[in-house]
Every structure is written in C-alpha cells, then in structure tokens.
Length: 519
Image (cartoon, rainbow, N blue to C red; front, top):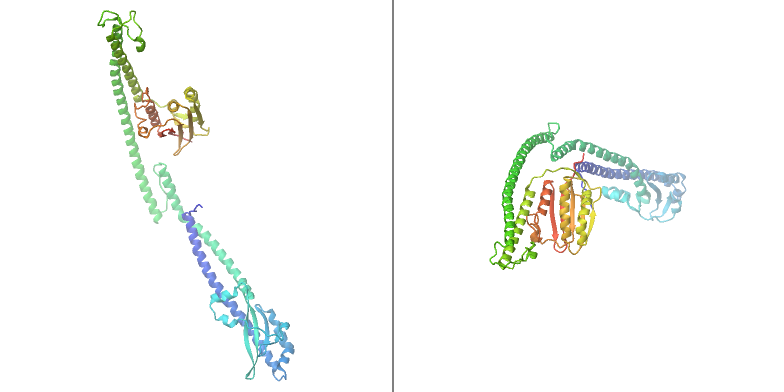
C-alpha cells in the first residue's frame, strides 16, 4: 500500500481541525454528561411531584374509611391521578402497594392484585457518577427505574407508592436536546477547516514564492528576486535569498567568461596540436614515399640480375611474392631471400603509411553541421550497407525505433558513420550467426538513447576498458581507429557512450545523444 504524504498545507489544516475537533468533542462530552444529569434530575422531580400528589389524595381517601384499601381502589380522583401518570415525558406508570408488595391501585389495571418486583432505585442513580448515569441511560436493552415513597397511617406503615421511569424515554429527551449541540459542533468543525485553509494559504504563500524562486535558479536563470513583504521571518528570508541570487548571478557570469576563455584557449591548443601533428605526419610521409620508390628500384635491379652472386639466372618465387617473373628465371637462393625481405619491408611501410593516415584523420578538427536528425531514418539509411555483411554471417537484423522517438541535435553524416561502424563490427562479432538489434528510445535527462546489441562472442572484461583506445584492436587486420572515431564523434556531440559485454552472450553499445531543443 502506498503511503500518502501530506504537505505543509494539509498538515496545518489537519492540525487545526484536530485541535478544534478535540475541543468540540471534549465540550460535547461535558455537555452530554451535564444534559444526562439534568434529564435524570427532571425525571426524578416529575416522579416526586406525582408521588406527592398520589400521597396527598391517598391520605384524604383513607382518613375515616372503614376499609382503606377498598377506598383507595374505588376512589375516582386517585384513579385519575394514576392514569394521568401515563402522559409524563419519562414516567411509564404509577402504582400503590400494600405492605406485602401487592398492587392495590395502578395506572395499569391488569397489575392490581399482583406482586410488583423491585426495580433499580432512581434516587440511587442520581448519586452515581456522570459516566455511570450515561451508561445506564444509554444501555442498549434499556430498563425501568423506580421512585419509591412509603405511605404512613399514623405511626404505622400503610403501604408504598412506586413511580416507574423509563431510561429509553430519558434517552430520547437527551437526544432531542443534543441535536442542536451536534449541529453546532459540525458547523464549528466546518468553520475550523475553512479558517485553517485560509490561514494555510496565507502563511504558505511565502513558501510557494521561495519554491518558485529556487526552481528558477535551478533552471539557470540569472538575477532571480523575490517580492516578499518585510517585517517578519519570511521577509528576512526573502532578503537573504535575493542577496544569494545576486552573488550566484555574478559568480555564474564570471565562470561563463572564464569558461569561454578556457574553451578559446583549448581550441587554440588543439589547432596548434593538429598543425604540429600534421607537420610531423608530413615529415614522416616524405621519407616513406622515398623508401617506397627506392624499394621498387631495388626490386627492379634484383630482377635484372645486377646483384646476382652467380652468373647463372635465378628463378625467384615471384608467384608467392606477387611479383612479375623476369624473362630469365632466377635460381640464385640469395636473390630469393633478398626479394622476400623487400616484400616484408614494403608491407610494413604501407602499414605505417595507413597508421599515419588514420592518425591524421583522427586528429583533424572537423566542423559539425548540427541539425535535427531522426535516428529511425539513420537506421533505414545504414540497413542497405550492412545487409551484405549480415547475410554473409547469417545475422538477423531487428530494428526497434518508433517514429515517435525525439530527434537528436547532431551531424547526420557523422552519426551515420558511428552507427555503421558499430553495426558492421557487431556483424563481424557473430561469425556463426545471431541477432543484431538497433534500438532507439527516449532517454533520461532530455536525451535520446540508441543501442546496438549483438549476440556474438562478446568482449573479455579485461579488454572492455581498452576498446576505445586509439590503435587498440583484436582483429588480425584491424587498424584500431574505428571505435576511437566512434567515441570521438559521440564526445563532439556532447553525448555519452558505454559498452556492456558478456563473453559468449553478446555486446551492447549504449549511446546517449541530446534532443533537439523544443520550442
């Protein structure tokens, strides 16, 4: 289950509402207990009033009567008083009992002549605590309490009066009186929530202003200031923020100027370095060309027999060396060995010339023609080029690049060279067949992620950190320049390049390129 987090505004509203709610609950509880005591007291007072009325009438009836009990049963005035007890707010009835507990007269005629069982005393409940009174009044089953008053004839007990009071009727009285209080409590809570919301909005406005200012600073804006009223803690914080913002703006401007100067100086150093390397390469190529010319002259003289140690013609193994056979076959072993050495020297000179050419190409500064480039379109353009290599190695090419992938900000020709280089290397890494996946998708930090994945032989972990080094190669006839050029081009685009490989399972090259700025 996800945990819900409250903001400062929500916490403030909840806190104020909780305080008001606790106060309302406490006052409501106190009010209910007081209300229950009042209802109980009023019920007791009604019972006493009815009991006194019955007692007064009973004394008048029994005075001078030969049969007091019969007189009580036959007196219409007493019967009227008993029947009127049924219309009390919480009184359920009244009865007159003799000394043996037998009902003589009652508001319920069916009880006359029956023994009336004792019930809880209403007067005793009045002396209990407020919580006990509430418990009795709000007991689920409800019960009838009694108010008892003895009847005396002279100095002797003549009987007793029992007034029944229902807790259910008392509960109704409490609830009826409680409804306005509950409505008032609900209105108080609603007003508390509204006031808390307004206070939170008023108090949190400076915080929102501060957050907006920090957001603008985080985006790189200069000269961000906050307009907060002075005179309180938030005003002091706003003044401090404005001072920090001014200082940051000044520092950023100084850093920008310094960075520009560093870039210009670095560019000048690169140009000077390129000129130096170009000059060195030129000085190296001239002797190489001279050496190639003299090697060719040497080969011609050997073939013509100038350096023959014996007068007989020599047959050189020209077919093995790739040389044209002379008119007279040479059979001198010394000449054969000399021609072999000439061939080896020529091969190494050509290889050195290729290295110099590759070094010049790697160090030569190139102008980027930056524009919006579609990565799916680049995939479509390189597919016809890599298809022959893929068919030769029985490689299946899979392209996963939706048209919705954002365009990148780059040089289309250079990025095409990067993808082509990686794709061909991947096909060559799967001599026994496999799958080449070309993937493009939105990446983190407003970048576009491009992946070239293969299921080939993989790269050992000890070699993985050296694959982008210039002249490093594991191929028999490789130059070690291809992946270095890939790394250099990605760096020129302010991108990121990483390689992940598992020997025997394949290699993945992951490239992150910046998106085109959206308006």
